[in-house]
Length: 143
Picture 1 (cartoon, helix red, strand yellow):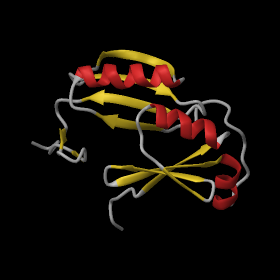
Picture 2: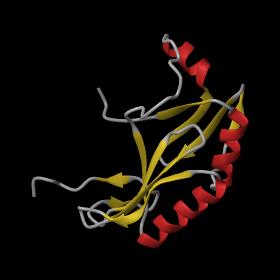
Picture 3: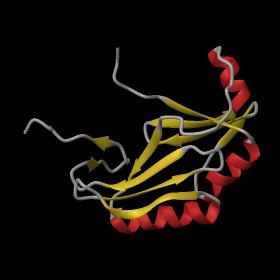
Picture 4: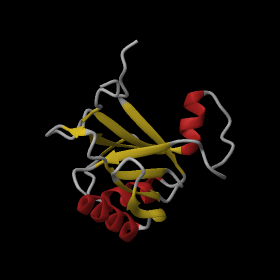
């Protein structure tokens, strides 16, 4: 099996609200058949109505109460970029769950929740390489 994530689909309560939130962050999107697609480097983020996503996966939607056990992360090139993304997210209506601060690994990071409660970490990790296209290259941890 290839080690790859092609799409990350976020189940949302209100597609228009979610689309407008991410558009306010500067994300360019395409909307097709009540589905919003955003190119995100070598992957895509998809916004889809929560009930439709649950139906598609063959599960019951238990609602969005509490922590879902997953966080999405965007690594950026500087501490200032962390601050800028967090400010833009807050201005767009995000809830800042953890303000930007120094991390245990020598970086700088913050968390926000989008209007549907999906957690995003925005981080600058000087130990990770970001290619020009934004793709992440993990270091050799055994070195």
